Amino acid sequence: MTTRIQWGWTEGAERWNGRLAMLGFVIALATELLTGQGVIHQISALIPHR
View (cartoon, helix red, strand yellow):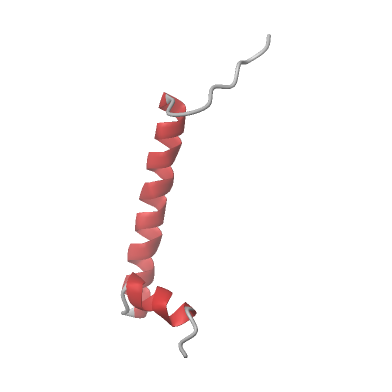
């Protein structure tokens, strides 16, 4: 039995996209709660300033 792979906006792809988005949101929220700094501030700390 062979499985045909579908590309694009399929139901499975959208489900994985939603799950990963929720995971990213939870990680961002937990990081903010643990450090006391927002996500934008943390990202800006990674960028070297001149």
